[in-house]
Length: 263
Ligand code: PEP
Ligand code: MN
Image (cartoon, rainbow, N blue to C red):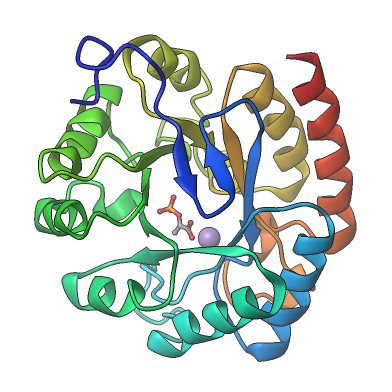
């Protein structure tokens, strides 16, 4: 179902007035985690003013350590929905379980299945049944075929609104948090009709690398980007080192627009 043999023409996903997989680059941006009202509202207003379409922010955070901030849970979804009402942004937020999915669908436009849950088959099936648009991240150490099989689980239940997201894979290199596999972009374009976005924040783990890799992702043919942005990265409760501040994010938007107009 995810392959071009099933459907040769590219899939365009329409959510309200935004199209993903059409010519225009789509940007999903926001903090790693929703932390409080002021943080999410300030970020959302800024992003809206810079032409971003989607506000991202984690309400349930699948953290490596149980002692790290785990997210505001349902209150996080509620704050995102409030920021969306205020700004007109669309909202994408991660689900980590069937219970969080049941909550999320009341507040968000798009659910995200994170790298750690790419092979949570029960969650994939349920997102398939819900028919809600989904960002499906590539697993931490998943092949492209395993990733497309995860998409297949969702599509097999009747939900074709899938946006693939390359977010880096684990390799022997430790300088970067993950190795962003940009070759996945043209591979997906070659074998699948689904749209694909790139997350250079988790893909590199370092804010300085986010803009260069964003430019490269768009040059490689990605349909959009997912970028972590925080008003004060040094104070972020998660992923501060890979988060752009408002100023560096503004520069990214301009750099990316130059590449997008050239491709
Ligand atoms: C995230 O987007 O906040 C996240 C946890 O990403 P990933 O699943 O790619 O690690
Ligand atoms: Mn993060």
